[in-house]
Length: 255
Image 1 (cartoon, one colour):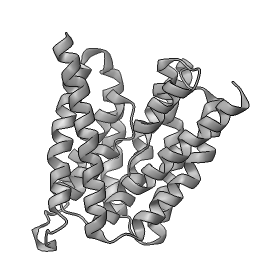
Image 2 (cartoon, one colour):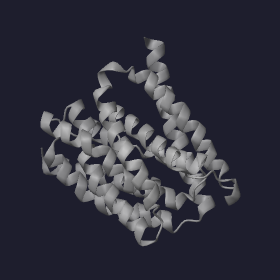
Image 3 (cartoon, helix red, strand yellow):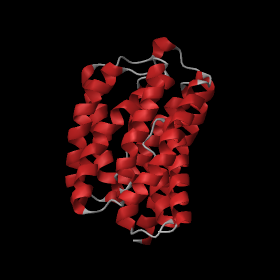
Image 4 (tube, helix red, strand yellow):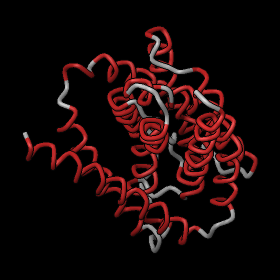
C-alpha cells in the first residue's frame, strides 16, 4: 500500500471516530465500506479490520464521557458479560443464520427505537422505564448477538434501546454504550486475528485517525443540548435503519 492509501485509512478512521463519539457506536458501519471502497483489501479484511480499531476508539469516547460523569458504570457492568457471551454465540452462528432476514429484523428494531429517541426529545423523565438487571442483561445479550453476527460494535442496538425504550438521558447512554462496546468486539477480534482476517497496517493508521476523532465527536455531543442531540442521534439511527432495510429488501426481491 502507498503513502496515499495510509492517509486514506487514517481519514476513514477519523470520520468513523467522530461518528463513534457522537453517536455512541463502534464506527464499523463507516470503516467497513471505507476500507472496501478505497483500499486494496479483500472484503473479509474490510469487514473484520474495524474490530480492533473499535477497541481504542470506543475506550477514548467512553473516557471523554466519563470525565463529564456521563457514564452509567452499573448498566455497562451488567450489559458487558451477556454482550461478551452473545457476541461469541453470534459469531459461531454466522453460517447458520440468514443474514438478510437478520438485517431486516435489525432495521425494523432500529427504526422503531429511533422513533423512540426522537419522541424522547419531549419525553418527561418520569416517563422513563427502570433499568432493571434483567433488562440490562437482555440488552447486552441482544447487542452481543448482533455484534457477533454482523461484525459491528453493537452500539446501534444499545443506544436506541437505552435511550428510546428505557428513556435514559442520551449523553449518559452514549457514554455507557461506548464503555460496553469493547466487551462485545474482543471475541471477534481474537478469532479473526487468528484467522488472519485483519490487516494490522490498516489498523494502525485507521486508529491514528479514529482515536482523536472519537474525542472530537464525544466533546461535540457533550456540548449539545439534550433535545437537539436526540433529534440528531435519532435521525442518524433512522437513516441507518432505512439503509439496512432498503438494501436487504432489494436483495430479497432479487432472490
